[in-house]
Image (tube, rainbow, N blue to C red; front, top):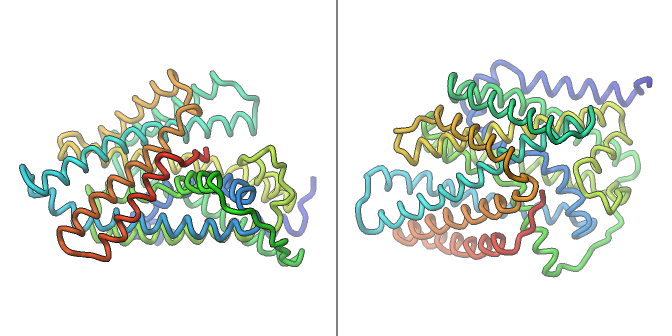
Length: 404
């Protein structure tokens, strides 16, 4: 099939973004390197399924719902950033009694919850990546998909063990560069297409009910991943982690809200019975053949980079919890081996909902820590904010429906 004028334009735009994100100066930039890990974790392929889910939940005002979700996620990020600045110095004194010991106990429990979530999510990301490859390019085969997932896990675990954080960040940067190039190209393509059809919003909406809140609560967990910055203390200072986590949330927030806003005018074309990643890929292909192909490869990079990001976070978590007795390198390998066992013994797609709830519960525990420290230091604004967030997160933990 011949490429159209639009296809060539899409290809040139994609290559332009790719050259920008692979610029050696950007690759060597310490701020960008620290931003890539939380950014990779936040933007998995979940952004594709969030659009049809939100559209069928609230119709044409889906972008406002996503804006609310992004703001809520940013506020939860404030609790994590608060803990990086105020909890870490408190725990570095090796508390043995009193307030600091209570904080330490909650922190250890929250890290245990997060470690469970990471184990399931990394296995899920890579198993889904394998499913994408075989479904999109070959024939679906569970055995071959498990074998490919195992091979990727071994590659990440062994290379992380032998070469450390820098090499995993290197892999992650290239995957994120491709992923972001695809996403920004798609945003521009959608903008041009929307302008050409008159940017028509029907103004349809659905009343908010309890079921809608359950769906919105589940979609919040699509934008999780910013907490990985908390576990990069082996390489980055608290100030660097706070700054780059905030930057990652702002970039991802712009992407999520812009994507939902730009794709909404054509979402009425979706098959209501098929609310998955392929729905958006088919829409992209209907606009441009090249865009459709790029949207097939984008999720592969999304799944891989999100898996590497959570592996990095898990290794850092193990290093933190063992006070350096187990290195992050060993942690990467440990996670890979555990996930291989999970892939071969459990139905990943059946248990991913538990990981989603674990992430929400982890955020609730971290926000509780931030609230206690804010109360102790008489930071009343932060205390009130974190106190409200705790209840929101407990609601999400109990009632949120897993978007996966």
